[in-house]
Image (cartoon, rainbow, N blue to C red; front, side):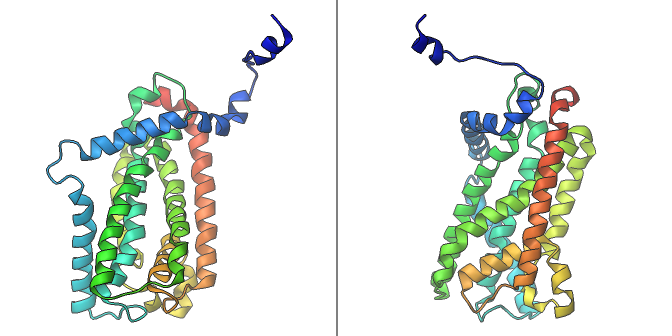
Length: 281
């Protein structure tokens, strides 16, 4: 064998801790599996369904109608930045629906793929990451509804709309941290799966989805932003409604810190329990 041929031959070196050091590289190497799982989730979601993708329209639209009637018409809460109440509510529903979809689907994803986990090696983090694709598709469908509402009410966004993709990424990161922690906990303790719907339900009402965060008293604003969705929703409204809906910068900075800590904790917890998934499932 020539020297050039010898250099082209791959060598597999087994050493203690090697898998841990190459984990993130393996995550990239298994990107094809990520796309396969994502496509499968999309096909399962919309295959043999009566409503199909229309559900992605109906769920946020009906929620917006209920919140507008209850908070805007009955409770007569003020809107934000002079925008129609329906538009303000929907700008809060966009990140919330994306967050709750990723949290719910990713948390149950490892147990749902138990047969795959127990038979072959791959970075298990691929599984919760793949679930985000379905949530993003639903999010894009919801954007169509928002565009229709803005045309109906003649709401014209400013230059801030260009920063909306950044807040979409921030929403995914906010959901991914607790989702990975819950995914690991559900593998170890199956009753944690009942906690997720409760957390999502409570989170909907403690987040400024159906109302404006400006209604929170100044003395409580910073504490309120310990909920990371507060800063994310404020960012969405700032991007869509323009400069008349300013971001509370100290609270937004606190939300970023909370998102970062939750992402670190969720990733760390997932990695620490990942090796035992095959045995526990």
